[in-house]
Length: 391
Image 1 (tube, one colour):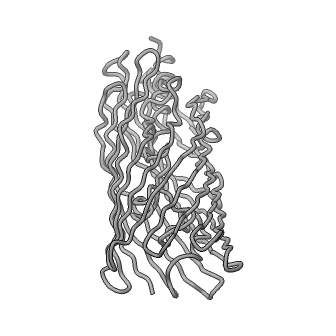
Image 2 (cartoon, rainbow, N blue to C red):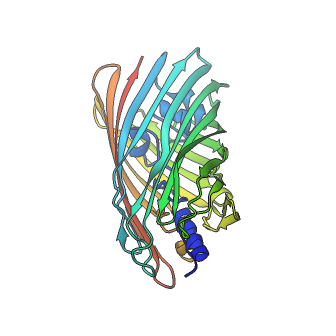
């Protein structure tokens, strides 16, 4: 095998792990940003329960139960056991931070701001190439955070509209047998628009659009190692990884103050950003054909207040894997393939103004295998804690 062939194979292997660094739940997208949203399996566009709505549907700020101020702060742990060609990844625990605030200025205007880790983690495979054992370790890390200042405006008793600016932070590092791109960071921007409409006393419609998040290009300046014929060529490497635009609609049924049932549909346009990704190298451009398809997500959840202090939630979320069988070999390490999710959650009112929420989501095991036996496999456990205060 020539040195040039080895370098190309190593580059392909490393880059094919990039698109799945975020082993979230719907492709590389988290189901929610707070324990309340996770407990509802992401079905929160029409009847949000906390200030985290500024990150999903900013118009929902106008519907929150509060007089002047609300704060929802929390964090979660994600445990994603996964395999590539039967090999286990050694890293399997990650933290997910989140927080949001809302301020009711008057009867019509509510301001809010939220921050959350929307994707991240990485992989740590000792060897993922059965055809070349001992040659293909892959270690990667990625973080994607979003800060969203926004507002909601109450147009009338039925219609609320809202918008938020998306300020994005993304970091990335890649290492394998013949490639080492150190941790680097970039910034980007996008926007969110949303509305809620009260159809009747018991029905509310919600819709939200989140634009594609336009990120600046990662740039790595790599020193040449002329003594190693298998080393990556020295020079500048560049790559842009944008985040997909999404459109979500939902219908909430609220027959009384103690019961909420919501069903949502979300379209995630992965094909715009993860069908093909270009790496600019000193030797020319390399186009990586990840082949991610757009994903349609269905979520349904119920929230029930069982007494004055306790509210419980249960939900189900489904989205077909954006990675098909034909693209397994182009996505080693890209383990964003879970499809079925079951969520449980609860809120306990501690005082008249403070409450604590918990949620647990199980993403059931799913394996994608191509015609020659290459496979990627993932399951997940996600636990979130949230503390809320309102007055």
